[in-house]
Length: 233
Image (cartoon, rainbow, N blue to C red):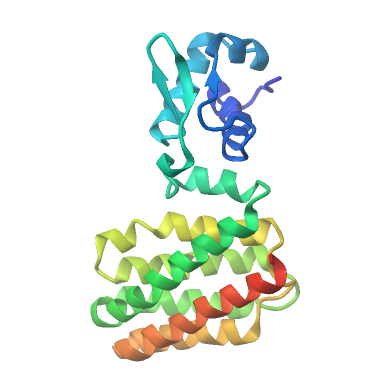
């Protein structure tokens, strides 16, 4: 049953989306909008709106005379931040985290090297501010505060790369970092070595040292994978 205070179709999505990504509705399953509308106690127009959102994520497709069909996992828009969030909430969280962290390890070091070549003075200053914010929140179990600066740091790196494709991955990286924190796939305090590496990346970018910026960022992503081996094997 839905509760007031949020968009009705959004409330439906918060239940139906995770159910699809968790495999409760396997690929090929046919969803009857009339039945779902009754289940969620919403109108058919609200249900259709929810289905349109799921279609935009390529989780389902509407077929005439068939209904709404769950698509194959290989067809899902796995870069959609909401899809990432739903998958991280499911049973395959370790696999999803590893997949996304491998993606980060392929993209972010290169982005950091490019940032060292293209970052503006304002971006360099913002990067330094983010790194210092991470340091300030790295002790005393302040993971939520740390997360804010960590997400901002990596967004700046991707944006400062000057590559629009990298920049669009900011939301993906944000979901990975947020998911690790909210699902407690983090130590109570961040690894001091990782915090120091972020400060050093900011320094390398500001100094225009592309080789060092790329190398240090690769160390960050390798460390993130090693943490997953311990916390989400």
